[in-house]
Image 1 (cartoon, helix red, strand yellow):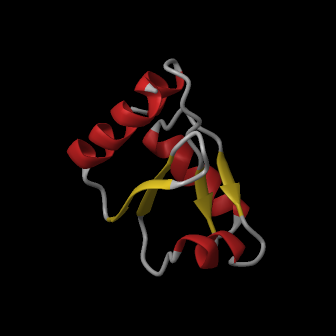
Image 2 (cartoon, rainbow, N blue to C red):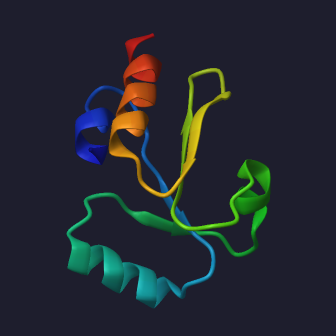
Length: 88
């Protein structure tokens, strides 16, 4: 999904707070994820987007507004929000 939408102009980020950089890198390699994970040193991103559980998925439109937010992974809902954002 990240690859598909990045080809359409979306930027996909994976941001982690609690795990070590080594743990994150190992997990992404094992899962075969193509995106590079980012690790926040403090919980600034968590606070900004109200993240209190993992995974939380947030779609932000081109104007910087939240177009959708989900706790857990709801592929259909995320795709619908991304389709609207990249279609603009």
